[in-house]
Length: 378
Image (cartoon, rainbow, N blue to C red):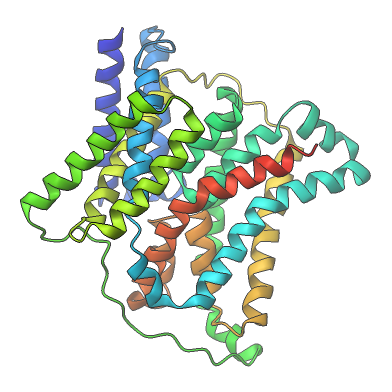
């Protein structure tokens, strides 16, 4: 059974990466609404369903939690360079952080309000523990797939609730992306309306792309990551402690080793994330998706609060309105959609969006832990 699990996982990763590279119009239309990475869940589930294989308890799942996920966290964290952050200044980062804060605390405030205004939603969230599905959304919106998967484990979110929330989340984020494409095109109008004359430098060298680095340093980057993760496997037993230590280690590696290849580590992290998704898909059951309408409405209000908070923040800081969709997509969309939305306004701003998206990826788990802590008050 382990052999079948590895084979299906490898095939899934190959197919997902193949889909991402396709330029066919019909495939692009499909991927606009159903991201390629979501196929990492669907493909294994479809294969196991029609083959009759039960791969929900194979050892591959333990490998994913103990080795693959820690490696993904280490590589993603090591992709952040502090030098990149100084380029964009403090105000866009403050607006971005304000957006992250709103994502992290808004669901808790909303649940608290429903306790007095609409008790059924409060009971659904707290007593039926649907709040556990909200926490991975915080990770997904701010940190991406890595944080989402880590927070799923930390909060012990049931698999069926997780995949149901995931589908809703992907639909909502895709609709939101389309709205942000439209908003950024109107950013000059909003600047004139609120009399904001903020200017941003036109271009920053993009340090995120895979560069022509020497073969030697690519190997050194990979070997150090492997050694650190293997060491953590033997020396650190607690899952949360391992995550925190590897996150800090990644930051130190990425910023204090002179020739560390940030783009290479990010690329490896991307492959590992898809692998984790595929392994999780081996034990998912798509037969029942029972998500109460109240939860869908809850999520829509949640993302609107996030936008309004950033809108108000931009006005108070007299910040160019283009930073609202850029910061929102860096929070909610991620490394692929944030630059895409930015390009709809000015292609030369894309490096800023990439840097904010990287910052989002490496802070998502921390914001999710704040959400867990706030929910624990209930």
